[in-house]
Length: 334
Image 1: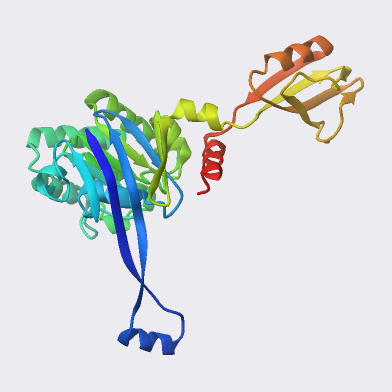
Image 2: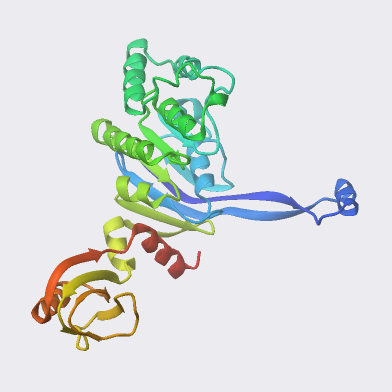
């Protein structure tokens, strides 16, 4: 169980104008601003849940993950994870925790990846049999066989991220924090990582908190979304409910032959384009393609079209997860 209650965290950031004069002056009198990274964060996550923790840049996502990891100590508030306070019982806490930061490396830069894994085995006191079993599975699932003997500094970003994910899982953690885990990965690798994380959650009941700007990761892995903005929790709900609430108008594309009078459309439907031209409502004989915007079910529009002309193809395009998130951001002003 993860429980955060009224967590607050601020930082002092030095500010100065450009120029040599201001640079010299800053040695004697430095000016600071206080940045409130986390203003009031409260939520609970149950064992085995997979949660998407999303928000714009600077919203406080990584700061929250660092508090839950024990890296940062909050100014006030409570954070209890599996009965422990992360920054007070760090050794016991991190033994059950796996963390992947897309912009930070847990691997040693100048040694082969396999050596980094062995060092992590020693740090976490992983049983040799369990370590070998985990390593074999991770190597197969993440396609690491050609990378294990390569120094980390010689890996591409995508290769390194696959190794970072393996490093976070080498000790079979109960909780996994993924902060931009698929950054730099190609399409094949992204799907492999998503499948692996889903299998890990299903087979071992691993609790997963996913922080990312890739909404396809969110849609593929999580059912619950927590939206953070300006250091505060703005929204917490099931992805299916949020999709229904923030989904815009869907698009229906119809291809048909013959004539059709499109002046009288069902309620909630409007014609966007006809044969690539806007503002037309009726056509004569020939082959045509019309695009409509619809609210709710498309069945009424399809029935009307099928009664007026010969349909050759129908496609309904739902609002993408990216558009839904943009609508969420717009409503909450983040």
